[in-house]
Image (cartoon, rainbow, N blue to C red; front, side, top):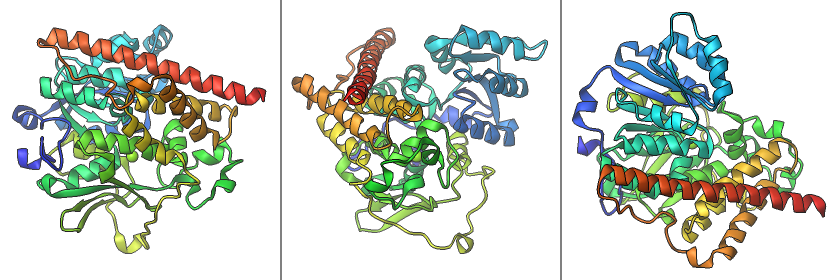
Length: 439
Ligand code: MG
């Protein structure tokens, strides 16, 4: 199986985790817990699971507050365990479940962590939105699960930490994010010949617009993604290209490569999901209809290749495929990832948190579209100025714990540190925005 894996500890690719165990690979049905089952990724995953009902058992489902959707999913899949954000959502959920079905209902960050480490579930789909997904990913990694990772923020905030845990617990990571899944497929058996990784970016609804065009765009316009239907946060991130910035960091951590070996290629048709450039200068691309079920089926059924329910790609009907350089002036968010990665010292945490806070302000109409990358960059500069000695150093030092219980305590302490910086960065953006408003 090692030859299917992108390459462990190699000079060209040092993948974040070892491959799943032979027993996981052979075990059917696979028992799965889903963190974030009511979001677009969670719903697509359940569509794949329903298509292969004899190959999966749903051990747990969870969401933040969408109790009505979760109740409907739970009634259909009957998992023994559910998790929601708080007591209010739990009450609502209990009311909506069918008579005679009484699953355990877990609450809050601890509840998600428990759902991610259910003993019966060998597979965890980490598909919550934003920094909130970190706790579940860390819990799944500590419990040695096979993690189908859709929550890119887990790696943006704590890539080194996830890597360190996977090496200890033999947890495995399969990338769901379509670009990273494409690269994963292109690297099969050829990881140590890979020169560069090429991430494609659709450019979102504002592809081709210049900076002046973007000054007054509304949240509604920014949400209108031409090819992908997604949640609000990731739709705005796609419009600013911050999503691609986060994906650069995600790729660095997944494949163990410096950001200098990652290129971004604008490709508005979203048919080429990403590419790998090999030592001889040739490229291998993974193509398909823009439908998340493909990447999900690739991870959930790995290493089997089966129809996902997504339509097959008919290139003769697809028409022209175009590729362009990114416009750094109109989309300054794209440059932030490389700054954050080179500065280290928690700058990736600041970048992600500041962007999340700025997107919320934009969705509320408090700030403009171009203020999102401006405030994110400003928060990063403030952090750099306030902590000059932290720059150049990893925010999470290498794990030192010997036993598994010590490891858990050490990871908890580091996660708490990340959370404190995350909160502080969000506050910083709100203060910067307020200052702007008072001018
Ligand atoms: Mg993506």
